[in-house]
Image (cartoon, rainbow, N blue to C red; front, side):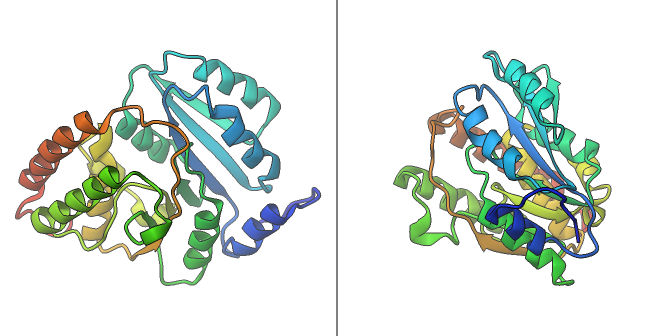
Length: 256
């Protein structure tokens, strides 16, 4: 069990209690792009309550606002915060970079506008149960707790249906937060050839095909800012990339 020598608030205690006894380090990977408006308000409360043995790795990618500067300032105030900057906007590459650079025994992947602490706690508990290696957050399983606009809900359902039909995905979501034993995904990120929004999908599908035990649980998502890329642009690109991923992985066996 991770130990902390400082005064613990309730959230800190919950994280400590949830963490598996055989884990000494937990790393939270957060890709960010142009997030100066919510960066401090989202990160600081987490950094203030983060137990010893936990750290946050922020992968900034191509921001044109003050995000990189704010991260630098926060890293000087909080030793548990580390950041990397990539030159171009690329969510998938940012996530992949975070996974490849990660050193924690347990990895938590989340988005800055989500940071679902309840999900983290549930995920850590499941990993500690001994028969789960990868916990995937699902917007679909959230049901009425999903507060996104109806158009975005419909888009999620459509894309998930295509993943089931074209790629045999046995799940309801590939984006969203994740809690993972790092050893369970060893080598998988380097197999992924897609970037941008399609990397998380390829990563989860390859992980499933590799036989990793994945458990989905609902997340409670309420949008606090507009998405960086409008839905009208994201959907055509997602449809194209799902088809490309289907052609790449078709008939190649379970461990591609």
